[in-house]
Each structure stands twice: as C-alpha cells, then as structure tokens.
Length: 165
Image (tube, rainbow, N blue to C red; front, side, top):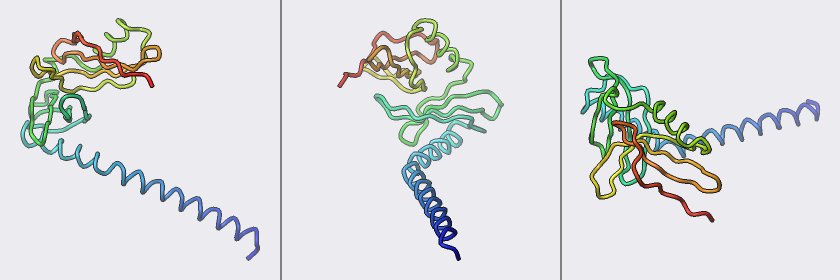
C-alpha cells in the first residue's frame, strides 16, 4: 500500500474513533436523565391513567419534579406532576393555560427579555404548593427566575435574580 493511502486510512479511522468516543460519552452522561424521565412516564401511566405522552420536562426549584404531558384514556390532554416516584397532581390541560399562552403573555409584558427556559413545575415558598410555569430569563446583564400560575397564567409576585460574578 502506498504511504499516502495508509495515512488517509489511519486519519479516517482516528476520526471515527473520536466520534465514537464522543457519542459514548454523551450516552454515559445522559443515561441517568433518560432513566429518570422513563420512570416518571411509567409512574404517570400507572397512577394517572396516562394513555400516551407527548412531552416530559424536569423542573428543579423547591421540589424536583417531572411534568408529563399527554392524553388520558378518554383522549383528553392531561398534565401530570410526578414527585419522588408518585403522582403529586394531575390536571386536564384545558383547566390551565398552555405554555404558548404564557410565553406570548410574557413577551407582551416584558418585550426586552431573552427567555432561556420556560417549563412547568412546582413552587412552594411557605404559602402552599402551587403548580406553575417556571421562567428563566435574561434581562440586561442579569439572569432571573419568575413564576406563573398554571391555572390562570398570572405572575407570582416575587422575581428571583441570580447574582453576577
């Protein structure tokens, strides 16, 4: 074999080996997250009669929870909050506001912010547990958290600002 052909084959093999290593590292780091999500979906199916799910998201604030969205046995859209392997709350989606409605309301009220993340979650600051949308956003040089009630989309009074470094 020519020297040039050997170099090309060795280069291709090295690139493939590096790509395989990156893929394996990604799977290794995400495996626990995927397993948690799958377990939360199974709990929602067993305890909340969820027939199919369309989306699952993890929220971390006062309580770490998984929020599973999907359809129940009657074909209605349902939202299920799963905490510590148990269904904490379930609600028909029509009894609350959608993520898109909250997002458009936020954009009209605060047009100068950059939304980093908006997910459903649980908020409990001694006033009782509330099912909310958790907004993480950037305004100017500061990152902030704000919460909006799931039932009506109204903002809770407090805004939490992360300190700058």
